[in-house]
Structure formats: C-alpha cells, structure tokens
Length: 497
Ligand SMILES: Cc1cc2nc3c(=O)[nH]c(=O)nc-3n(C[C@H](O)[C@H](O)[C@H](O)COP(=O)(O)OP(=O)(O)OC[C@H]3O[C@@H](n4cnc5c(N)ncnc54)[C@H](O)[C@@H]3O)c2cc1C
Image (cartoon, rainbow, N blue to C red; front, top):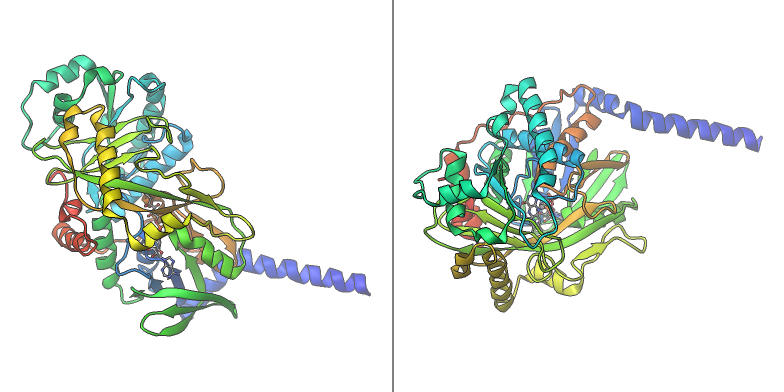
C-alpha cells in the first residue's frame, strides 16, 4: 500500500514538473491572451533595464522595474563594447564569437550609445606574449563577422567586414608620425596618427593591430533606457525603490519594497537583475548558486590638445605590476584609464566568492564602504596618478596628464567559478524565476531574449523594436545624468564629436 502511494506521489511530481518546465510557456501564453503577465524585475542596471525594454515591447506583459538608485544603469562602469573580446587573451574563441554577435545586437538596440573609434592592440616588449599569436582569433572573428553581414546586411554595424582588423608595421607608424593631426578622422590611418606621435616605439612589439572594437557610453545607455521606458505604458519604473523582501506566493511572488513607505506587489514572474547583489535574492528564495563578485575601478585623466585618439590596449599579465594598461578616449581631452594591477584597477581581496550556504559573496568592509560612501580624495589622487604613470611607460608625454575627478568603480558579478568568464547571460534556477547575471553589458539583450523565449512559445528571435530616439535627445539626457552623478559631461558626449 505504502509502495503504491509512493509510486503515485512520484508520478504526480513528475507530471507537475513536466507541466511546470515544458508546458509553462504555453500556459502562460494562453493566460496572457486574457490577462497580461505581471513581470517584476529587481535591479535597473543595464541587464534589468534592457530586459524591461525588451519585454515591455509586447502588449501581453506588464513590467514593474525596481531600482534602489536614483536613475537607471547606475552600477559599475561600462566603456568598451567588447565586439570580439580582443581585450582578453585568456578567454576561448567561442566566448569571443559570442561577444561579437552580442555586440552587434546591442548596437542595433542602442544605436546612439557607441563611441565609434577603433581599438589598437599593443603587445609590450616587457610582455611574454607574441603578436602573431593574436592573429588566428582575429581572422576567425573577421570571417564570422563577414558571415553575419552576409546573412543580414543590417548586422554591418562595425564597418566593412574586410576592415575588421588591420596590422601596422613600425615603418608605417614612423610615416604616420610625420603627418599632421587630422581635424576629423575618416580612415584607419587617421586614427593611428596621434598614437604614432606619442608612442615610445622601443617599448612595444610589432606589428600593432587596429581592430573595430568600439566604446560604449554608460551615460547614453542610461539615457536611452530611461527615455525608452518612459514611453512604454505597460512598464512602471520605480526609482529609489529597494526591494526588501521576496516571498513565494501562489504561483508567483510577493515583493515588498520601500520607497517613501513600505509597500508590496504580486508578480507572476520574477527576474533577479541585482548585479553583484543577486545572491541576496537567491538567499531569500533559498535557491543555491555559485558566484563571485569583483570590485574594480577605472580612473579619469585630462590630457588636452592631442587630437582624436583610438582606444589603446597594452597587454599585460593580470594582477602583476605589468598588468594590461587601457587608455579609453572621450571628448574634450578626457581619458578613462584601467591598469590591471592591484595598485590601480584591481584590489587585494577584491574578489569574493559565495560560501557557507549563502549565494551572496561578501566583499571586505573597506570595499563595501567605498561602494556605499565613496572614496577619500587622497586615494583618488594616488590611484589616478598610478594609472597615469602606468600608461606613461608607453606614452611618455602622458605623464603630464592630470587626475580628472572621481573614479568610475563598482562591484561586478561573475556567475560560477571561472574567474575568466566574460560571456554569461541568464539562468532559470527555479519555476517562474530568472536570474540575469551578465559579465559584460552586451549580454543583457541575449538574457532578455532567453527570458522572452521562456515565457512565450511564440516569440520570434528578433530584438524588440527600440523607441526611435534622437541622438541629441540621448546625448543631452546622458550629459545631465553624468552631472547628476558628479562626473564630467564630456563622458556622455559622442566621439568623434
Ligand atoms: C571597473 C569596471 C569596468 C567595467 N568595464 C566594462 C566595460 O567596459 N564594458 C562592459 O560591458 N562591462 C564592463 N564592466 C562590467 C559591467 O559594469 C557589469 O557587467 C554591468 O554593469 C552589470 O550590469 P547589471 O545590470 O547586471 O548589474 P548592475 O549594473 O550592478 O545593476 C544592478 C542594479 O540592481 C540594483 N539593485 C540591487 N539590489 C536591489 C534591490 N534589492 N532593490 C532594487 N534595486 C536593487 C542596483 O542598485 C543596481 O543598479 C565593468 C565593471 C567594472 C567594475
């Protein structure tokens, strides 16, 4: 009798699981015909905002987006699009191909957010790496880009596929160094002229590689998300609203949130897009997860009158004093600097792992204080100066640059246990619950698409139409957002201007 009962219960459990996992999208879709699905998104970073933009393009969804901060996309910095992952020698080719595809889709959704200038990849003399070793991957990426453009010409957002990358010899750079700085760069060579004039030729290996890896503007992303969602009647954006409790309730969830007063709302489907705080929602729902959280910072320097610069990457072994140096240009002679050493971008104890039954990694107190209260001015000066000196090894005149304000910093999540993971999007670890955990901004749209596929059997695999925004509108709001966060407005300006 007992055995029979157990068999019945097991069968009932299997049927229930099947319905939940396999038939859930169809059920939800049928339900949606009568009543929109209520989707709650916790976290208005680039992941949560993009998912809200994507889902609210459907009229059978009602989205509520909760963000504890004052504006959208206010998490850690975003400055590179990573269209091919060429900043990361250590990742596998598949991740690079994924990042390339995702970058193309991201540029289509956020057409006014790219800083369209190339990236120059440099292998320093002091580095053990070899330039030739980088070429097979670049050729693979170029072929893949060519195929994507052949399949759909609208994918051509990174220039001509045959121009995806180009090598420059020492002799070519010597010639370019003699040319005047162009008023506005129109071809690859133009972008190399400022670098050719400033580079210490003896400090690098040849050739240099120019690749169509563009910049991505954090502040114009924030503006685009805000303006798009403001135009959607089926999306409520609740800024300054922290979700303080998440409870399973019926088939969905009850979210308690605090604005001016504590309130609660019921949602059919929950999306955790809390960035480095994603583990706190997992803990509330008792969903186990492995993840890491890393605190990092980039610095601002002003260096006027040097023409239109490309991004320049000087490779180096991460975490050593010779870690990669990155020079990211903005308007008005402003540069953002990374140095992958513990005295610049990285921090000792800056990488925390989930452990002890909690899915939420805990950063050391001094780093948590920085996240909450900001940085002491002396430390800003010290690390900004170290970043300037790190670049000046290759660009001697850059030693004359000056620190230009508070760093761009934050804690970033890395799902799983592989610290070099760069392409990650979303998991569905429990019924009606999605956890969007991206490492790079361009994985936000794939996460949104995967969630839509989970919710709706009928969804076409295309990006939902973005609201038509004007470039000026996006830039003006982006500049305001930069100023509201005490950063120079130049960070939000399009380059080349
Ligand atoms: C120094 C540095 C440089 C970087 N450079 C790049 C780059 O060039 N290109 C790139 O693609 N990526 C870059 N990254 C990574 C990128 O910043 C992150 O991957 C990205 O911001 C993650 O977006 P997200 O939306 O998942 O998380 P977040 O941006 O952290 O957003 C999560 C949001 O959730 C909100 N939140 C959390 N808990 C709650 C709650 N309970 N209630 C309400 N709201 C809540 C937070 O306030 C936050 O706004 C960089 C990271 C760092 C640290």
